[in-house]
Length: 562
Ligand code: ADP
Image (cartoon, rainbow, N blue to C red; front, side, top):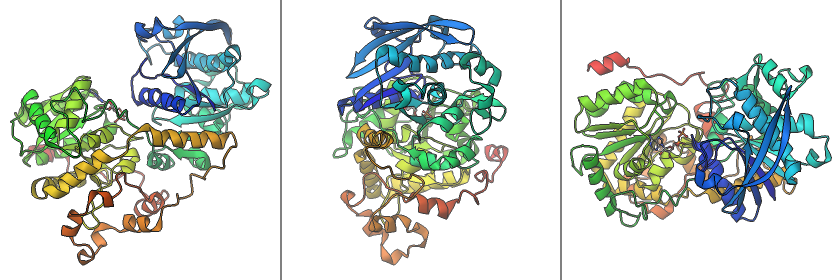
């Protein structure tokens, strides 16, 4: 199959977030499976010279954007079986920043979308499918259907659009976008391009793409509700029969505790002894009391409200009243920098906070901690919880988006689970679950080790996700019939029965805790499967759920004063 990816970033060339990881990992996996995969990217000034030096000039042409005629070069590089095309225009992309500062994002990415489509005839590459990612590529499905589909070369091309984070939509003035892309007035109604009085590149893709995906099944469900829908939930509900959730994979070579050169000692699920050495080294490195018995709770990620840091703020004094150590690595909002700086001073030798981008330290934290906290307000997929599990660090997460799809809370009756989770966005629910985890850590090492091993043995590779994307591509070009994503997936009855048994209602006699604790690892699935439909109707039916999750009971000032 011939597939064209279009994206604004991709490792190893340019990265500001998870989008780059996904595009950079998925494309080579598909190429290894024998597909002709090509990736179209802007040629930013930030692309390292080691790559620009190896590029060859494929073609160039002019692009008309309203009254402007702009040069468009296509530079080419083949890496790992994937052909990368770089859209070259120094005025748009040769700047000192990647996103945001110039006030002409609509023009830069309008140009990029136009260039990606026009380049196809010049390169004589007629893809079966264009897979466009995030709002910067959002106008591609729209332009293709509106302005190109009548041309024989383009008429058979199908489009699939992936939402990596619905919060970022590319919202601009209609007149500006019309000026650049020449889209007539009749297209600016709310069933087409108009969106609350504005142009919205992401919405354009949601209307015109043949299929839509996002990066986890739960997030695909959540964004159809008002709370998570970022004002596009109505449209997403209207397209629910074409909206799929495909969970991201991990770079399992980079994140491998059996070979990782950045950690103090390597280890595996069969022999966890090296993890103790990693913990000791982390305590030494961060100036924490070196004590193997004190559990370390870690966090790595952007210091943004999305990550649920307000909950940590509310209960930090209660948390530190436990015998724990707490480690944070991240960059972001100053209020969280202040919070963790304060905590580091207040709890010397027990809290360490580092506000920098440091991949090596991130690895050492994943390896050296006992627990990994990720109480996100929303989480399209989340990589950190998967990385933590791969390093035998037990995740404590809020049940949202990809966190809900990858972490199953330990059930003491059935023995199922690979971590701990809570549902409401509530600080004391979180604290209670942390205390529950601490209980197992201290008093039930068998269960703890079981959870560590299950996490480490989970399948986080890209192969499974890539197979799902291929299935969608094949469905798009009519090779197979696709399942309607709004219908529940078929799950074997026995498995569904176990999953649906609420822990609190199961009589203890039916499955004594001691037996469950002794349950062999093989009996539980390494990667939890969910009965998503059942769960969502049970816990929060879209129509009946409160618009916002419940807030915590204790006001912050009170908590701090304690
Ligand atoms: P998001 O994409 O929302 O930022 P994810 O959990 O999907 O969150 O991915 C974040 C990735 O970035 C993880 O691999 C995490 O380890 C890494 N990361 C985040 N902050 C830092 C940091 N300060 N230093 C090193 N790595 C970081």
